[in-house]
Length: 173
Image (cartoon, rainbow, N blue to C red; front, top):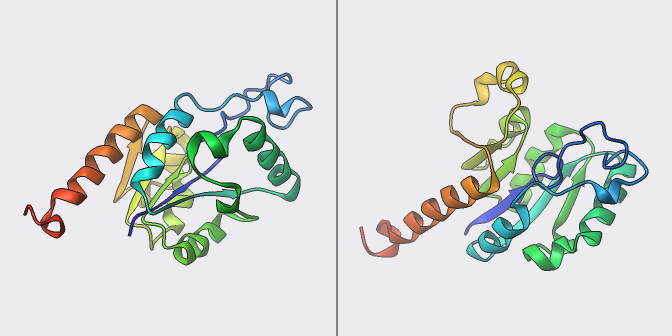
């Protein structure tokens, strides 16, 4: 059973760059761009998993904005991750129990701190990490795959998932 979890801010939605016109926290938050390649990569990857979820830490207002943004950008249809697969929590450590309850086997987040809480997730991907975040939480680097883009992540997962099918369990080992 393979189950994917994906964070939102910095992974699906570009981080705010201070431009009031495209800031996720400004009046025109629906104009905030998606991370390059996210829709294409998820559309390819989601069918390779038994289930895929979006798991995000945010406050109530940001949760509402996120739901609107995802709907506005046709995220659910374009990626195959339906609105019933959205999970929100209010603190970063809460992602750990959510991942365990959902049985997530793979998780993509831009915060190394969060990946450190996901001790039940076997495959963790640190997406476009910030140097200060890596320095502050370097103890969590063991077992974490660093990736810089959605095309890189898709290629990494494609290779890993193909390998899963051709190993001993697939009868070719």
